[in-house]
Length: 351
Image (cartoon, rainbow, N blue to C red; front, side):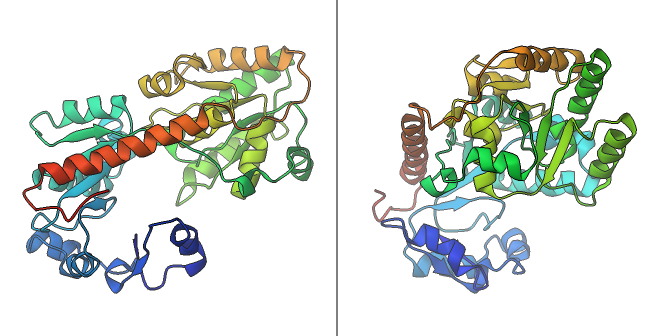
């Protein structure tokens, strides 16, 4: 694992403690260092290539970075999603092209590609139909460490002054996350005299124009007691709120493979999610689904869940999580081995 010289040693220690994982700090991976000009013009990020050579690397996993088409090693690139192609109106022209050029460069360089879902794979083949790159689906799984499950959910609920019956929406305030539909659903319920509380955590967009417009809308509609914005909260608190919520809500307009859904699956939390192909793939048909523009349908699911006479319940990790994590690891290792085998560069042994 490569990191910059200024990266936090305490954060890196978590990875260094994993058996057979080596952490290398090098100037080539500083956040303010850009090897992109060399990678694009000369075909290689010389500093990164030297670091790989020094560490006897067999295969490079490339994410949000391009090391050049002349890098003398097999490279596996991760495409998290193709949102810029599916929802181009949510990107500035510069942001769209920055993302598009990066993907095209990786495809043209013959990278092996990892995608996080069959849905993302289908998008990739549709938008880049001429690409003949080796592609693998690797569905990441979430298994929180024991320290993240140590917080007492009742105490966390009291800390944020939440009622025992609440829904949880832990998404960042990006436009495609579709928070506004939740506001519309709560407005419908308020008009019917149904009190539903949605706890919301996550950071605002930057600059926070979208976030500020939603907060103003909530104020004007008198929904502050229903839409409870908690801010950016510790991850242990996120898991505590997940463990005791009535259901997870994810109204997103687009996902590559939802982290919040994956976390909810690990804790066997009921889910109310937008009707995306990837959500159906990820939940296996076990969630409640609504159209991304159908606030009335979402309101109906919330009202139904509120009306259930269920005792307060704190969930534990589900039985499926270990198998899903093991399958994720197996799929990732297989993708790396396939890239090494397909490369003309002799491997020094991939284990």
